[in-house]
Length: 179
Length: 172
Image 1: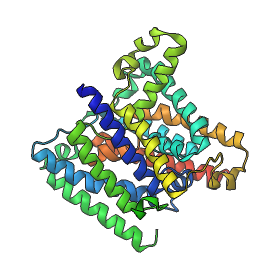
Image 2: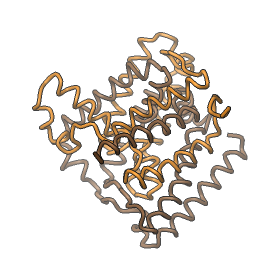
Image 3: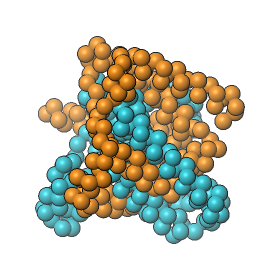
Image 4: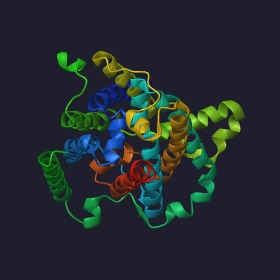
């Protein structure tokens, strides 16, 4: 019963997320590609304001003992190489896994027909190669699920506050130069 | 309630909204917002329809499990939420070829679809390789200040910016 309730929560959170992405323009190919062409900074503004609001709330709630964090483990081989391959697809397709779902809801057929098929093929291909990659390149330069505060051996807030400050300065500067 | 039918909201309002939404996904569901595993599950579930039970025995699918979970419902919700928002503002449109693509490569839907398929293959493959996407690493992981997520998010944009320059400023 509890699992079903969580599935409904997942759906509700998704509806709000999709609604916000569409209102932000992030379900549109042109908005995403303009970000990668560095002519329109809407996507970065959305992401960075989410990080500012999120990181403050999440670290506050964690210190209160209300929530647990869910950091992902990683390595240089995993995150840098995987990230660059992802980036190539990001520019060619013009959507990412979250925004393609939004693009489908927005009516974009290149997302619904081409993009979705491609992502399924790409994910299937990875599943096929996973046994070969698993203990090789994916483990190169392993750093586990370390957080930036753990890495610098400081209190969380000593990273949260400067990170938020730098992002806010960057956002003010983007507005200032008219981007 | 007029704001619900506006075409666009300020990116700062949208971003802050997503950040606050994250508070609640952690509080209520004990989960960060993330999307890309769902596409791998879907791919496995579709393959299973054709090739049978053996598909779920692949090591990667044993790891992620071919079930309908919280994140799967989140992704379905994104489609619905975007449809709702687009419908309320009258910006829902059935469209094959985006403007920027058309400006560089023309309005042929087949060419655009081929590019979307190839792009999707890289995206799907890369998201699994990096173990996350623009939401799981780029938003949820960075806000948790996880090293792997900051490195991934930066790599997504470095790869994307270089590829976009090639596509729209070098090749054409």
